[in-house]
Image 1 (cartoon, rainbow, N blue to C red):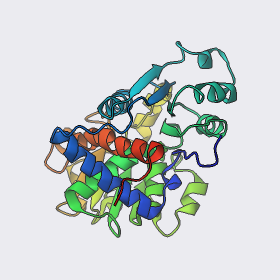
Image 2 (image 1 turned 180 degrees about the horizontal axis):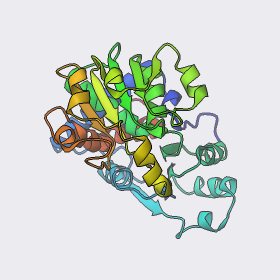
Image 3 (image 1 turned 90 degrees about the vertical axis):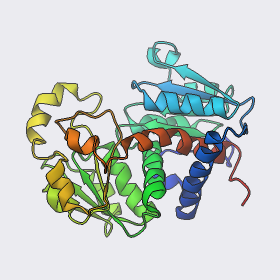
Amino acid sequence: MSSATRHFLTLLDLGADEARALLHRAIELKRLHAEGVDYRPLQQRTLAMVFEKSSTRTRVSFEAGMVQFGGHALFLSPRDTQLGRGEPIEDSARVLSRMVDAVMIRTFDHDKVERFAAHSRVPVINGLTDRFHPCQLLADMQTYVEHRGDIQGRRVAFVGDGNNMCHSYMNAARLFDFELRVACPEGFEPDADLLAAADGRCKLLREPAEAAQDADLVVTDVWASMGQESEQEDRAAAFARYRVDAEVMAAAKPDALFMHCLPAHRGEEVSAEVIDGPQSVVWDEAENRLHAQKALLELLLVGPPPA
């Protein structure tokens, strides 16, 4: 592996100034696409997409992004590769990275992407693990910038499970310098080490309305993520008070935005009136996965665009 090979496994693989520049580049790429500008910096480049978890937005956004950039994306499921038959991650990394220009992995254990990256000659992108979902945060931050400007110094409320989205928001609070308030039930807190690392920017609370007080952005996620379906009933009971509804949004600032990484379950973690209401920007947020990831691919494979 070249010492110059860069990976994107968590948000903190970017510097603060670099991350802000990436968001503005994503907005620029979105504009160029809307105007029909032919920009293909990744001609003859191939992205291998390894999926051990199913996906809608991650697959379509990466695949469409590579096509728009003039490149190609390969969809690889466990049924299609030796990964699903027990080939060591390290061996798969050594082989795949000799054939493609970048690898995106969507899996369960975060350790898998770290091990793959350690043995890859090409950039590895975390498309989601049980610990982090950094590509989603790039899209979320791009969406906030488009609607409200820089998020530095703002207050963000995350309501629900201390999961990979919560962890990524904790990293985002450090990277983009905002205040994060997390409301979750006992027993579902985010990892203590990440909470400690975000000390000073992240506060753990129990009441959704308290977390949302004067917030500029309110975020939630499903109560049971992929792989936790057997816990659905128990989680529904534990999270019953952790629904983002009109009452929670009323505690936030009048112009607060609502985000959800989708898929959403109306009537569970969010009420229909909120997700389908005027403060919701979830469709812009979903679309921005495409443009934020194009900016990321460009950065990792071509380098930062000229100033």
